[in-house]
Amino acid sequence: MGQHQSCTVYKSRTWRRVAGALEGLTVLDLSSHLSGPYCAMLLADHGADVIKIERPGRGDEARAMPPFVEGESAPFMVWNRNKRSVTLDLKSDDGRRALLGLVRSADILVENFRPGTLDRLGLGWSALSALNPRLIYGAISGFGQSGPWRDRGGFDLVTQGMSGLMSVCGPADGPPHRLPIALSDVAAGMHLAVGILAALEARHRTGQGQYVEVSLLDAAISFGVYEAAHVFATGEKPPRIGQAHRGSSPYQVFGTADGWITVGAAQQNFWEALCRILDAPELRNDPRFRANRDRVAHNAELVELLQERFREYPSQHWLDAFDLAGIPAGQVLDFAEALAHPQVVAREMVVEAEHATAGRVRTLGIPAKLSATPGSVRRAAPALGEHTHAVLDSLGEVA
Image 1 (cartoon, rainbow, N blue to C red):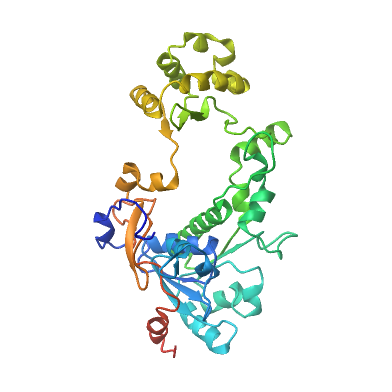
Image 2: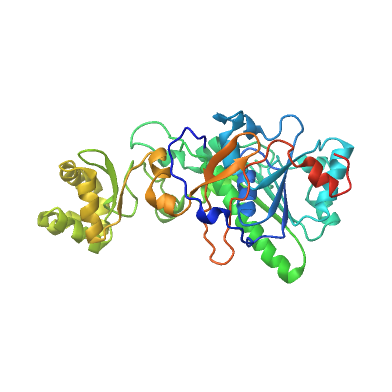
């Protein structure tokens, strides 16, 4: 995000002001860390006015996450853009009164406290829906609002482990591997956003809001589509298979003379094209590799043979040949390379915004491209309490 990093930024459409699809909706974001704020960011990106409610003095815990740009947390700025920040002490009468004032005209509320926390403050679903029957109340928790683990705290680390994801990641032999990206958090935020949008559509028909909840564990479980199929079909736990794919071959990472590439040639026409590129009719005619199911069963032998060939030439040699043949393939990039890739730049997945204290900062773009009501990055993440006076003055409250 800082200006010291090397990354091309595409700017043109980012600054063209077009009404977003969710313009006119007000979202109260009471969440912290990543899962809830990510959900609220998605809504903000598409035009909703997201008011982030934070504790006075400290704010969201993510504000303390390194690295920093001019004293501001770079991670916090990535997933809190397009929001306004208001500081309220929800344990005080004045803070609760101000929040209730905001709830009266809000469309959506997002929170990720432990189940029951806001109920004890008189700010849970039953109280707020009575005040505003049109309110859509979105909640994320570690394990959900029901079940024997309801009251336990949960983080991405814990739910990755419990979901089975860690058991199938990493080399075939060795300890469980945590994916170093926050899959449970981001997936929970996405699922909650989908649920909220579904509830909005239902509100168009009924006029009534509803309660939407997602757990980190449920979100992590939802990733195991192949692994669940394996369990359902065989009754056995899926083995760890390293870089291989459970249902497709060849479909994995290969080393070249100068780096690494991914090759997706499991589809029969791609497999046959790959054999032609390698001038290897013996592979195409080998009964072990004749059809995809055969290649999956003998993937280890096939990979060993292919790897010998791929090491003979640099990555670009293979990528050019695969491109001509229509075989899906790509170079394995690090994050700095990925963010500077021409395709990523052309798709506006790196954009800029002006931060109140950090200055011009970079952030990620918006993946969903709407033709008539495109999303936009209109403002950088807010400084703590930056909009408290403006928002509360509009209610007639004293900040």
